View 1: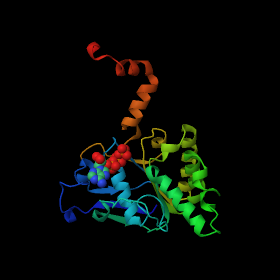
View 2: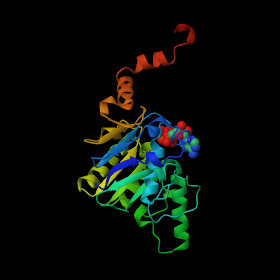
View 3: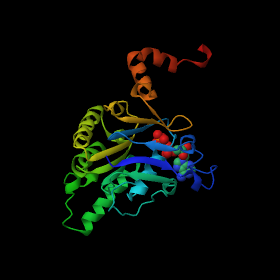
View 4: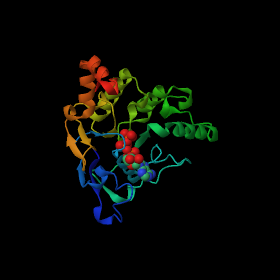
Amino acid sequence: MFLRKITLLREDIPDFNKYPFTVPAIRGMDVLELDSEVTFFVGENGSGKSTLLESIAYQCGFHTAGGGLNNLYDVESSHAALGNYIRLSWLPKTSQGFFLRAESFYHFATHLDQLAEEDPTFNYKAYGGRSLHHQSHGESFVSLFLNRFSDEGIYLLDEPEAALSPARQLAFMRVIYQLASRGNSQFIIATHSPILLSYPNAKIFSFDADAIESITYEDTEHYQITKGFLNRKERYLEELFLDDEDE
Ligand SMILES: Nc1ncnc2c1ncn2[C@@H]1O[C@H](COP(=O)(O)OP(=O)(O)OP(=O)(O)O)[C@@H](O)[C@H]1O
């Protein structure tokens, strides 16, 4: 493990009425203690998971649109609004790792193609040997996990399941397991996947309340709704499609 603590520098915040401090979970944040190789951020859409993850990436020196320390490319990266208002406590510090952002992964793939154009020796070795644009969305994620992720580093992943089939999500959990069990990799993952969230002994932080708090897997809405739906699909669908006058 590397990153042990994330502290919101409350005394430095000029205005709590401006984004990102208008987001309840961020506004109420104090100190997050990380004590597992795998940490999940979970919560409703818009609850602040990406905002916090991006600010961690910013503090790590990673491109906030996705990439590692050496990936400088020109795409509209967000300003990491929260980036200057958090403090990361490391033991030990690492600058190795990667920020995967599903929504801007296309731009990262283009950035690699540009590198290949400029440098004929660039062979996509860390990305499966060929342009990420020549692989399917899911294949390109898997190439990244298998080739770019190495024994040491902090991996910040924003909805990695976005491109992965359920089978590939399970395979991805094995990649996490192999890296994390060697003791030198740390993962912080914002996700909506009930499969990924089941990773054993992970810390799960929920962003659904007025502060970010640790919860169990079974207490996540993702687990409860998915389980309820799969157990009683007909009942759920019946209620979902009830005509207004029937209610
Ligand atoms: N640059 C911005 N300016 C103002 N508001 C923003 C900005 N970026 C995000 N927001 C708002 O902040 C809130 C938190 O957004 P964020 O992207 O962190 O949510 P999230 O939990 O990652 O959601 P999702 O699960 O949908 O990805 C949302 O209400 C969003 O509309």
